[in-house]
Image 1 (cartoon, rainbow, N blue to C red):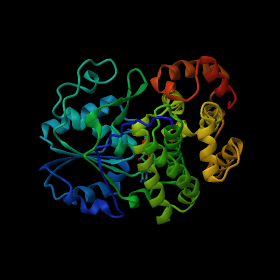
Image 2: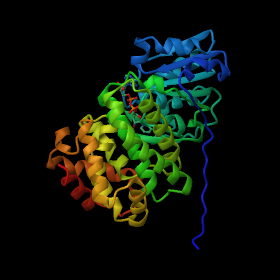
Image 3: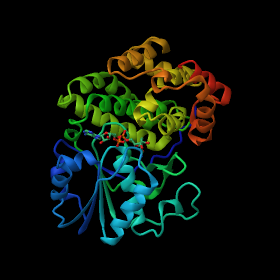
Length: 374
Ligand code: NAD
């Protein structure tokens, strides 16, 4: 019999409850709060309500977080946190706000700039002193339960993930009601981001029985709920199910890392302006076809559990859902031409994640995959 051996490490406390943001006082431990939030939630007053729910009197807001947060934005937030002697950081928003909050919280007691630690930086982060609470408002990235932050260097235009033991939030507080305001196109792209997390974790060379169980549940849940969540934004069951799927997918890929889909998503975002979820979902059907060859038995078992008799039937269903929620499956939708492919391949191949795909992916294979969906 084949031996079973794996590790599973996810130290974040998960609090999942409708209206949970109102009971934050039960969770915070500190006297000076930096509320790092998506600009949308500052403008509509929700960030202020969440801050009030902490009962902390000293509160500083930082709401200048752009999608795909820049290193420069993170440094500005850290400076504000240091000068206000912040000991609690809340990241309220999509993956962008949560990722920015992770590094800013660490930099409070780690000297210097993000550039000293990330990319070519040679310093190593010390344990974070401030409490970190992440509250997602999209159902997609799962950043609230990962030790990863993704940052873009505005000067070079390069977007790269960074992992640290001190990025695991102390608390992931998931309140599905916060996702009700997402417009359909953001629900669609972020929801498919969670779907790619689950599917990449499932076929990853690093998968394990716990990540598999989570991924299977996520894939089923998203197939059953994403269309309703897009079409009926306040449908509380669909929103709750998508919020669950996002957090479960995050826990799953936090153990396995992602694979080729995410490697290719970075240049599609930085060079062609695709939102993160769209940059992932656009190559999803083509990657399913490719990765299937490296994981036939496991993928067939998944398809059977979900009621599909072959890989093409599953791909057809995924494509039909993407069409129903207005997500493109052709690179031409991002104005990508054949002459752009060489550079996309070159950048994607530099991301170590590409090697977690369960089949060999080299320059030629990736070029052909992208050409097939032009
Ligand atoms: P986002 O945080 O960039 O937000 C996208 C848009 O949605 C913004 O305009 C924002 O204002 C809006 N928005 C967010 N919540 C809303 C709501 N409830 N109502 C109305 N508008 C809302 O999007 P995202 O997809 O959640 O995050 C993407 C970022 O996360 C990327 O940088 C990506 O690389 C990163 N990411 C991180 C991880 C991780 O583990 N750390 C995983 C996947 C992706």
